[in-house]
Every structure is written in C-alpha cells, then in structure tokens.
Length: 152
Image (tube, rainbow, N blue to C red; front, top):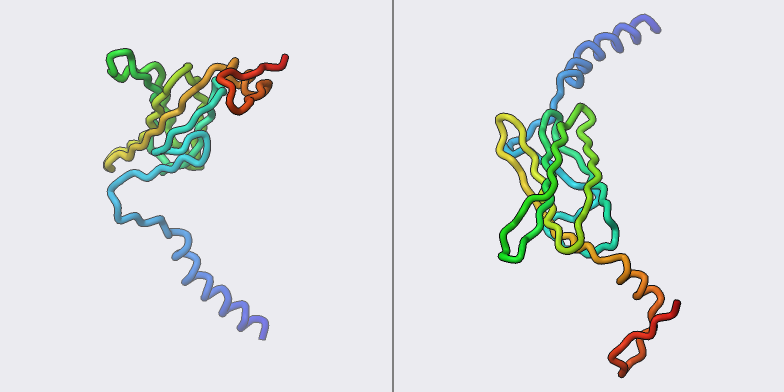
C-alpha cells in the first residue's frame, strides 16, 4: 500500500511541479510599473522641517528608477539641483536618501525599462526653516493679539 501511495505521489509531483517552476507574472500592460512605499506621496504636497528624506519603493527587476529634485527660480523656470538613478535588482526594491533645500522642492520619480513605456510621478515638498519649528513649539498664541509670545 505504501508503495502505491508513494508512486502516485511521485507521479502527481512530476506533472504539477513543472507548472509552478515555470510560472511567471504576466502583465498585459506595456508600461513598467513602480510604487513608492514611503518617503513621499506622489501627486501630493507636504511640508517638513527635515533636511533629508529617504524614498523607498519597488519596481520590476531590471528597471531603472530616476529621482530628480528641482526648484523654481524667480522667473518660474524649473532648475534641477540633484538627480539619482537606481537600477532595480532581483529583490525589486529601492531606497534613496535625498537632501531637500529650503523652500519648495519638486520631487520627480520615474521608472524606465527596455522595451516598455516609462512611468512617472511627482510631488512637492516644502522645507521650512528649523527656527520656525522652534518658535511654534515654544510660542503661545493669544487670540486677538497680532504677535506671538515666545517662551525661551
């Protein structure tokens, strides 16, 4: 009885195992997909006092993630001040620490892969001066007054 059960198990394994071994993710889209899991919220605007931000996410193996930081000058022209490129390995994960300048930073993230159309997203991070944070933490606002009392 054990022999018949073992033979049946081996036979089933031979027919089922190759199906799983050669299975691959199928995508009908010809666009390279990526997601940002932390650090920025694409499509949004946020404020911070932090100088550094770590952007993490995932994409397809072999794709190239580009992170670009830009600021608008006085005439409204967008000037790039930093850029990073990360090639995605077998894990599909990426992480990059970026340095934010004071003011409005435009963070653009794109994914490219040979033979596929690229994907793109951006957000705005407004970096405020640290002194403002200290004043907000130590200040008392009294309704009806035009100034804030600061306690040191």
